[in-house]
Structures are given as C-alpha cells and as structure tokens.
Image (cartoon, rainbow, N blue to C red; front, top):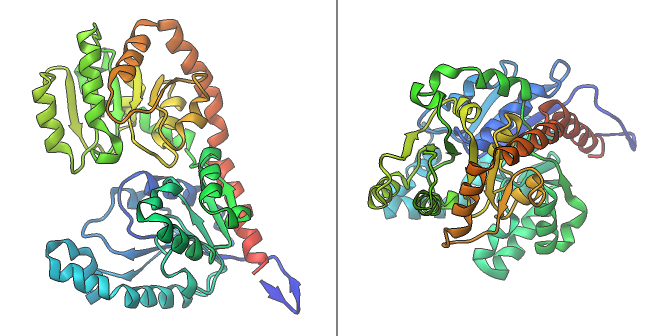
Length: 401
C-alpha cells in the first residue's frame, strides 16, 4: 500500500485465499490448517472458489467461522454449470473451451470488487486470469513445476509469462525450488520455499479417535498407504511390490485407505495377484489419521508429488516411512535414509520396493530409529510456524504494492 509516495504497513488487511474448487484432498486440508492459524482479529479473510462443486466438502466444516465465503462461478450460473458438466459430451466441452476467456474475465472482475490487499492463489487456478487482477498475487505450487513440460517448450514459455504476473511464487521444498528455477530461470527471484503445515495438536486429537479403526487391525502389525486411487499415486506398482514381498515371506497385511478413479482396476489387480485376503481396500475415510497411529509402516508409491503431507503425518505419529524417491518432496523429508527408507524411483520394477517392505518388517531397531528421528524433525513444520512465515510474506506484499 502506497500513501504519498511512502510505503505504509496496513493495520488491517483483506486477504483472499483462492482455489479452483474446494474439495476434500491434501490442498484443501493444508489451506484449512493455515486459515485456522493465521491472525484474523484485525484482518478479513475471504475463501474464494472459482467453481462450486456439486457437493459440500467435509473439510468445509473445519474452515473457521470468521472466514467469508465467495464463489465466482456457482453451479446456478451458466458458465459455472457448463464448466462443471463439460465432460458429459463433446459439445459442452467445446463451448466450455470457447468460453474460457469470458470465464476468466468474470473471475477477475469478481476478485477485483473485493479490493483485497493481497490474493493467495493457493492452487494456481488463477494462472490464466492473473493479468486481470489488480491486487498483488502470491501463487502456490502444490505439484512439481515440470508437470507443465508435457506441452513442450512453447507451453513452458506461456506458463512462464503468466507466472510473471505473480509477485511471489511459493514452492514446498528445496527440490521443487531447484526444479522451478531450472524451468523458469527468469523468475528465480520470485520463488519462496514454504512447506505445507501440519497442526500437531489437531493431528494428535484426530489420531485418538480409535473407534474408526476396525477392531481386527488394532492389535496387528500392517503396512498402510493413504492416497487417492489415481495414476499419479501408482498403487498398481504398490500391489505388485507387495505381491513379491509376500512371496518372499512378508507377513504383514497391506491396508489401503482412499478412493478414486482407479479403484475398479485395482480391485481386479488385487484379485489377479491373489491378494484378496492380505490387501484391505477400505475406501475413503473422513478421518484416516487413526490408521497411522496403529500402522507399523507407511508406504508412498507416487510417481510424483508436490510435498507429501501424508509422510509428515506418519512421521509425526512415529510411523516408519517407506517412499519412492519420486519428485518432489520425499528426498528432502527422508534425507537419504536418515528418517525412513528411500527407494530409488521406478515406473514398473517392483523389486526394490518389495525389498524395503521386508527390511522394515524384519528390523525392529531400524523402525525405532526412524520413528524417533522423524518425530523430532517434523516439529519444524508446525502450523503455527508456517503460518507466521506466510503472514510475514503477505504483509510485505501488501506494504510494497
């Protein structure tokens, strides 16, 4: 904020937190955690969605009461309804594509009417509308920057041009920053490392809800994964790896918590591998955290991540971690085997992941070391600490605009 040529720190700030939609996954949980920690008594917080979902996210109940809700394109509007139903047929998809420019203009006008001091684009869904927005923008990468490379060099240049409209760009770990600087070196000074937060007290409270865990699992050692059942999470490889581990003597069952588009394929693969009795697919759970408390090992098999909060949650609850060394996040968190088993990334070979399962199962002392190291390390990701860092950045942006 500039007054008579001087920079003035605003006593009160109006901050908009934007998402494309507000669903029920990791991005929404991380944003909810921040909203609960950021100072609000003297400030106004607005949670803005571009598109309204046809269901209310279960995480919406965790958004603080002081947060104001807004949506640019609700389902009861022409463009909102069109976009959310565009996959029904090719005609709707075509009209949606043609109308994107108009949608971005509507979003830009709606955000500008709030006259915010700063806008947090928490999932980069404002990328195409960024040049229309008057308030300073800070964008968050929750995925690896190289995900854009599928469109080739021209797409990377277009994305780089759009990102130039942001004052700051948050990346979630050092590995992600290095990748972003490699892809867009001209934006090097904009990148800021700010990990996803976890609320340790809330995590402990949620973990105490033991009744959600099936009784037969409470006294049994088992491997656990919590993930959406999608291509990115690579559960197909996990099942094949577990099959090899089982054949080599693994006695622990594998529990999979989560749902998604690959569920039917994975159920068929489980049957084909003759794992129906040893792999439990429990579906989506509103509170999956108690499973981490009872699990003897957590496994992440993703092809890529942004910054895997599920690993942080496992570490905070002293559940030893096995993770593929996918980009980005696991290398930074596990630090080359210091706080868990880091398996060289592979698209299709299940051998190394199966060997890691056997190693963790057979070595009680190794599990104890990982649990102890992880518990101490994870404290630096507390929601209070991360929210303080974010608020300082937001205040600085508002002051210099």
